Length: 390
Image 1 (tube, rainbow, N blue to C red):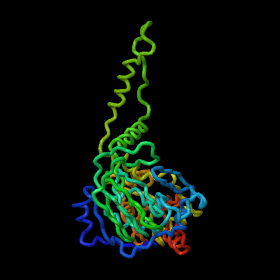
Image 2 (cartoon, rainbow, N blue to C red):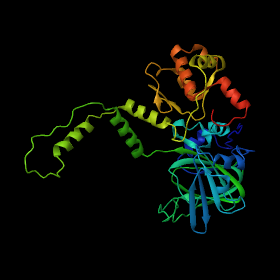
Image 3 (tube, rainbow, N blue to C red):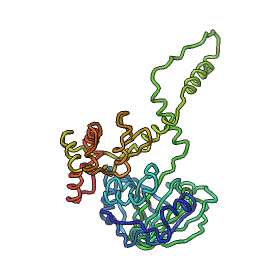
């Protein structure tokens, strides 16, 4: 398990949000003093071999870049002594409890913004080249050393014919070497190029997505269209013989425009769309259901408490509660207990003493779906050293 604690030094989280967040880079020396990698090199390579895990292998030979997607067998991963290659393992927090716990240090940022924790292992000279990201990122050096060249992107032109998006004319302003425990924050769009200095370089990237308006609009329109049932059926106005057969009928265009005009979403609709969209698990995420009845799961919750599975996503608004892409029923939408679960990721047996029948029923149902773990299930998993699937 991770016992890492974020040390702000002369900063505070409040000052960081006020002066730095989404404005400028910040280097925190020994942000996690004495930090030790949560996974060994062998464990990370094994994780990259799992078909449920998103992984990439990037190799450089002069100006030539080669990108492959996992899963990777150990034979497919280059020798660690070979220079200029990087293994990227995405969403480690979905598979490793300690990685999920590390993210709790960053919950001064809204959960709705969190993407995942990616681990990159690089041999000497390895990296992904000069690039920019459309999200906020904390780059925590977990092992070895990495040189970071960073700067604002004045020219976003990309190098042609590359398998990854590399900046063609990157001009860094700062040149930094990060040691284990050091952490660099970069806002969206800030150019950066990280190169491993020596072997066994391991960097943890904690990313916070900043979805473009167009992406959110597409999701809103899709969900609004899905909610439209029935309605009038298109019928032709009086037709005349001899009209051009390939002409798109103006009446049909008007009919479609009228259907769009009837869509008048209010704030509640947008909340519902964002709540389900931002809590929907990634495609490779799956949950394992326990072999237990709803009644026994309910009793276990009451006796030992419960906590969210590390893969579960839970958000709420004043009117609704969302978990894993679903909104709870209107009856449970006002529940303060469920909001406490979303904020704390767990509920103790004491907190559950005042739970209503409906709240206990939905908690038991989430346990049956694998979204929630009872206290005894979590304890058993920790005792056996189980870090994945449950």
